[in-house]
Image (cartoon, rainbow, N blue to C red; front, side, top):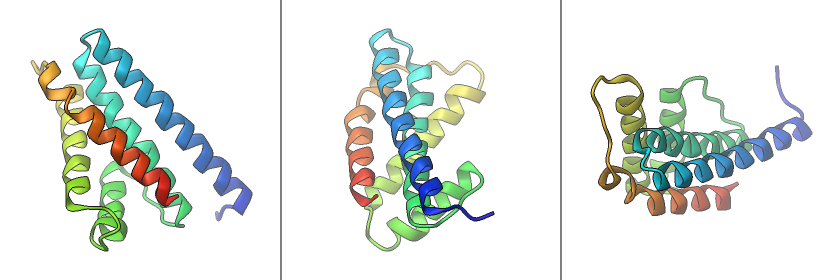
Amino acid sequence: MSLTTEERQAIIEYRLEKCESTFSDVEKATEFGMYNTAANRLYYAFYYVASALLISKGVSAHTHSGLQSMIHMHFIKTGTLSTEDGILMRRLFSLRQESDYDDFVTLTEDDIKPLLPKTRKFIDKIKSLI
């Protein structure tokens, strides 16, 4: 099923709002020392903005790894996004996987705090591409 322009725009706007709301959750979780939760929310802030970008360009991805592959293929490989953006994308996914699924993983402030400005910059860069 293909989307109309209006439907596509509505989804993009929704995902951008979801990105900002989720990034706000990161800041709150970090403030309360909930670093595993912050890792999850950081990844999802990235996920929502990246999925909005793909939708805006007519590219679809149905899994988390598919989304990362499409971002890499259409934006990192072409130079629209940097190699550092790709490294950040993989780092956020890896931390989310570890904190959500691995036993005895306790992330710290040192794991999360450096990622906040990098992720914020990435989100802003993606929004400018949309």
